[in-house]
Length: 383
Image 1 (cartoon, rainbow, N blue to C red):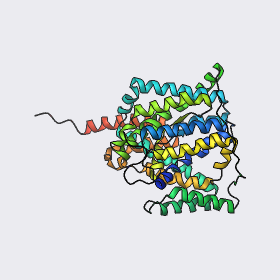
Image 2 (tube, rainbow, N blue to C red):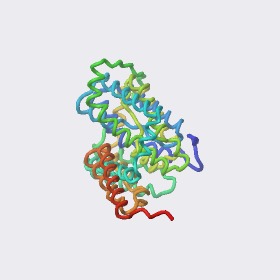
Image 3 (cartoon, rainbow, N blue to C red):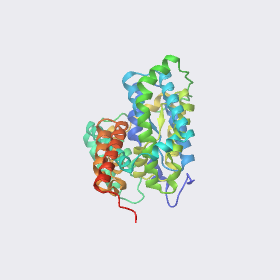
Image 4 (cartoon, helix red, strand yellow):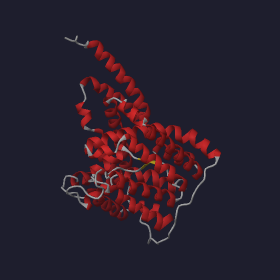
């Protein structure tokens, strides 16, 4: 198992930079659930902090912890109550634990063709890029300035590009009244409160949150994340297997969602983002997790306001660079010419609809491609 607190010549500034890489997912979803939907900050942030630190210690890799996006969308648009959020997370956790413990998750992963996996990765990377552009356009000069600065600084060896750019963007936003500058932060200890879902909470969350989320979690948070981990870290990345990712996500949701945490998972985009900005070890999620835990326990209701210091345009710049890296993978260019249209169909559907339908249609397209190839290139007779 890789060592979480150091590998080779990695440095703390680079791991700190990597820890900032996935803010593009964390801020819109997690902070939005607190400020818009009214979820308790202590529970949401405590859940992320515990899962992040545990992830860094177990995997020893810059694996992210992200909000489950379909559930997050329902929280923000349909106003799920705390009991319904807890029910959704616990049900999703039980399903993931079951798939991991029975070994079915590995069988599903082995059945996915490489062309479909490459298409999913391309589509998810493009989704990150599109979201990044939307965020940049909300405050263009800070957004595009942050993007140019990130491109330049990431070419400088050992430079912690992400925190430097985010701090500069926050100062620029404050100087131009484009960012929130909170007043003096006061220490206000708080602990998460336990929520017990009712039967009505279970049924409502199952219908509008669990079913849409499950397929997204299996594709992005398990299958593509495991594949990307092996691609980035070779042998060290084997620990982030489909089975382990399902088990860690399932266990975290079953244990933490009753205490106010949002449903959480790992994610390929977050892994690429943290790797892109310098994360190479488990210290990356540990740094982020400790910071979130301090905010959760020490600052309570003020925690969400502190994250608002970072201009959303700078967050969009992080997403664009990470999305580009995720989309342009080695497997994209290793594929045979006959596989390109399978990759294209999978990526297009992932981008325009969702990864679950992209997986299904990509699978069907691959079966058609394989049948055509067998028909055009008959099998050679054995000597």
